[in-house]
Each structure stands twice: as C-alpha cells, then as structure tokens.
Length: 167
Image 1 (cartoon, rainbow, N blue to C red):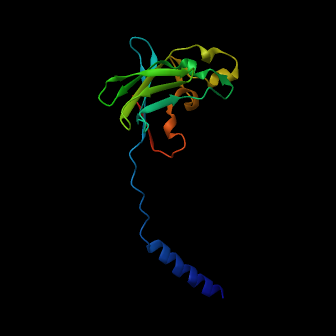
Image 2 (image 1 turned 90 degrees about the vertical axis):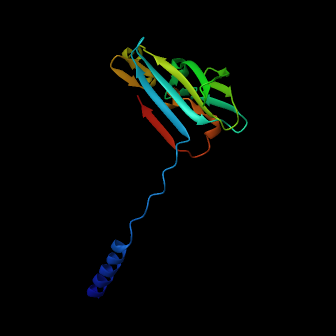
Image 3 (image 1 turned 45 degrees about the vertical axis):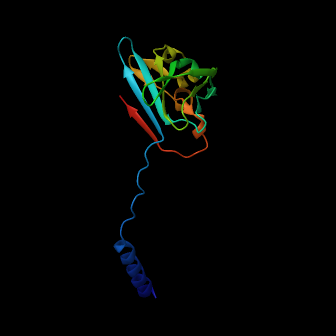
C-alpha cells in the first residue's frame, strides 16, 4: 500500500511539475501616480504630486485624514496646494476644509495636484504622537500616507493601481 501511494505521488508530482508555469496577469497602468521630490533650493522642502483622471463630473476632491495615530491637524504640514490640467494649465482649486481640496476640470481629464512640506522641528518633540506627523529636516523625510498624501475621493472604494516615484 505504501508503494501504491508513493507511485501515485510520483505520478501526480510529475504532472504538476510538467505543467507550464502560470503567467502573471498583464500589469495595469497606474490610475494614481504619486511623485515625491526632495528639493534643496531655494530651501529644503519635500515636493509631492499626484496625477489621476478627474472624476466623471469633473469635480475632483483630494483629501488626507483629519487625524491619524493621535495626530490632530496633520494636514497643517501640507502647503501651497495647486492643481493643473494635463496640458499644464492651472485649474481652480477650492479649499473645502483643513484637509480637503476640490478642483474642476473636464470629466476624466488627467489632473495633477501638487503640494509641498517645509522643514519642521517635530522630530525633537518628546511626545511620541508627534513622531507620526510628517517630519522633514536635514537628515530625515518621514511621512505617513494617511496625513501626507492627498487622495482623490472618487477612487476611495475602487481598487486601483498606484505608482510611487522618488526624485
């Protein structure tokens, strides 16, 4: 009986190993493309941007969490938010709240939203919750997506491919 099992396992294993390897599904083009750039001139700052197709009605809202991990007002680190069309034309941008912005464009048009983070002294604070904030100094850039990366709300409940590029 052991010989029969061994022979059956041998036959099955040879069938499995001779099967062609599964092919990976083709990679999808990213719907969301983030870029993070550490700039040193004129002063040290981190520059962020996200590129995405606009909402179906042309009104695209971008936001971060109002609070996360004990950090209140994490969006305070987000400065100079701007929006542009795929052709580079500046788009109107409205600040809806401390952590939400909305732009208007052609429906489905590729939109780029950019912002920056300036250097700060949070790293020297002894309160551990402060260390969840976006930190930037001469030695460190640290950020948590929930409070640093603006996210388009029209993609919230939809699985999507994301690209993250560093410059």
